[in-house]
Image 1 (spheres, helix red, strand yellow):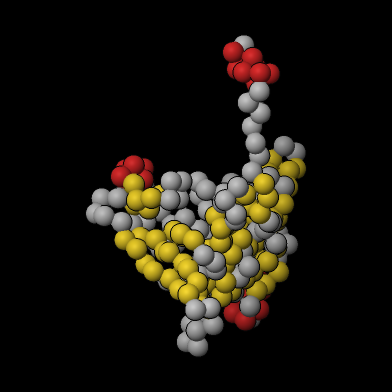
Image 2: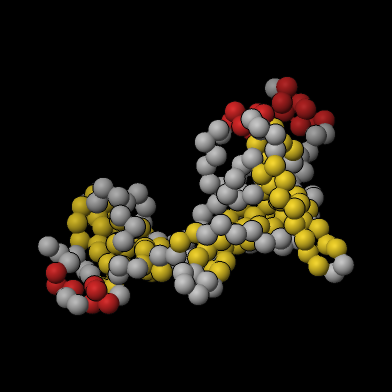
Length: 210
């Protein structure tokens, strides 16, 4: 097996590899992950995708292709902290949402529940039957693989999250801190910016008509 040459390094943390193979994983140049445990580098040779083994992650680590490293395999916990006033989706349940507000100089939160058969909609900020019909299985709306990971909330770029590590003494875990931009702004992956305004002048109307 190709990993035996790594010896004891594999059991400690990670081993560095340099063997190349035809790839059924690669779709673009650069780093990629195979089976969430192996970091490979993708390139094209003679019109074929080639993957070169770079790192084999240790038992408590997973592959992170964006930065080409192995990161600790944290679990995702169930925690929500208010980051500002407003209404926020529950990251873990579609039928509930949080109302965050200041009172006596402290941030408070209320967990509100939608009526049976309705989910909270980040599009309308209301409990919605249409939202329940759209995704009854309630897929997880965020991805937290490492501390500091940033994402935009699905279907509403006004909402974004930053993955934080909760330092539990027994088992630290990741959870998303959820934020909102101001009403007329959206998150571009780095910061809140003004929403683009479509030009609805005569020229636009003529373009549509044509």
